[in-house]
Image (cartoon, rainbow, N blue to C red; front, side):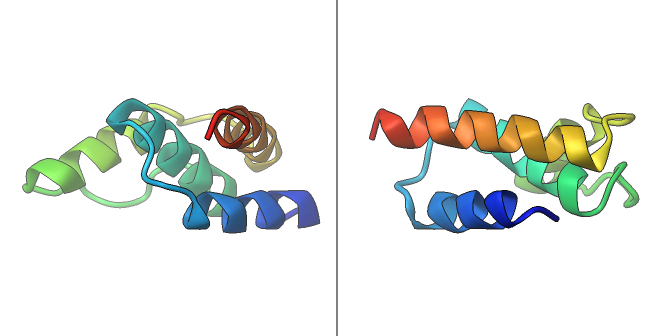
Amino acid sequence: MSKEFLEWAGKVRNMDRPSDEDFAYLYSMYKQATVGDCNIDQPDDALGKAKWVAWNSRKGISKEKAQELYIKRAKELIQWT
């Protein structure tokens, strides 16, 4: 993982909770950047399912591209807070 990605991930952890849509985007790109394609079964609970659906929708995006997209969105969100 790039130093810039880790830096922005830290900033995201310290920001106010974003909208559900932005949270799902950041969560899914973070998981794609750090783990790769979704590798777990779909959970039964609503929050777990929503997170799983978001992450699974990123299937096929490289870890490098996911880091790039995560950083881009994090910068946009933090600029407006």
